Length: 328
Image 1 (spheres, one colour):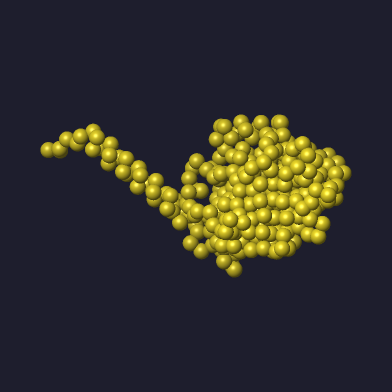
Image 2 (cartoon, rainbow, N blue to C red; image 1 turned 45 degrees about the vertical axis):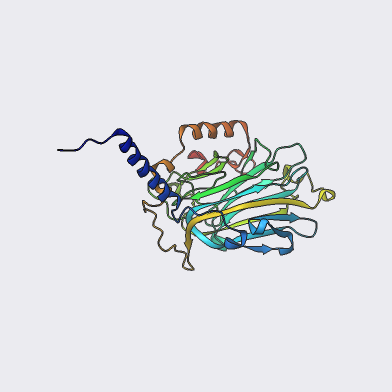
């Protein structure tokens, strides 16, 4: 005969089970906590222009007439997640570019996923330019004007790299966008393509159209890079607006560096990281597509904030590239 269990006891047992499962998730080795800058990154360009702050948990990048600066991850990654908080140059930032991107460093056959913040005159919006390189070919620029001021406070730039997935910003954890800020791996059969996010709002979806013979970045591990540099020959209004050096030096700030991913070895493989490992949180079904709210936000961005799309630039592409016809 089964003994009766008091409802309060049953509730307590259920609560403990839930807490245990949550704790298992929180202490998972893939859910790393933010580290110091030098744990995962090294300076690649102009060490004197990068200053560590708050015991190495934050850095300041500087651009003046003598030089810009840059840094890169110590490792390359096949997939996972990387995030950091960035505060961009305030005021008159015309002619400057703050870039956050991934690159396979394979010269003519490189894969690259770019997120470039293009400065502007005071009072004008910051523009985000995204670009996709696959097997050495790029020229797939799209530009969106941000609907907030990214220089007034830190914003989290967060990219998740499930197998063959994502480029994004602010706490993104969605599947089926090819890696950015975290390397990549061969796409799964249901792969929908690569996605770019700002504050959890998708601003671009780049689909896998290999069936139409369009190159797609999918198999080369990538390093994480960031630079602050002068590009007034093209960055602001096509080069019409030049840097006002009287406003220099220009500063951008980074903090809360966090990489959770599969590190690639010298052979380009990530030991112990399986694309079909159910223990990887990025394999969950909920990360496979945009939810209805994200889909609505995506349409809102495209209708109200997109200012350039290579797909519709007839002067560059009299005939739209095949990936555009497939519904980019």
